Image (cartoon, rainbow, N blue to C red; front, side):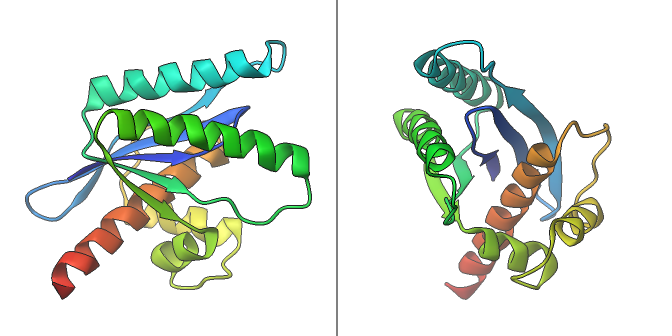
Length: 163
């Protein structure tokens, strides 16, 4: 199974493509942090995010999208923008017939560290232990996307085991 994992945002979008091979080993195929410029209108930023999603889906041909669910925040302006970016990302996945899996931050922390209140350092430390990352990562958003992909593959493996 190949997953396109997304840490959503409108300024920075963490992306990762993770594949589970025939030996049930997870392999990081690609990861990056896609950025949009605050100098362009918001709707153009959303268009750029949609175009990048289409490019990634076409290039890597994932079977599913894993994306972080929004968690409560005090900044209403930010949460609205991220919600709109999530909408574009989920639309792109749905338009390309990908299954969509959504995970809350505590679900991701539990899957990656075993502890739902793990801090960012614990999550990042475990990401490097759980999957081989051969290139330097550009941001926490990229590492968060990798953690989301690891979560999806772990849960998918668990769910198929329980069937």
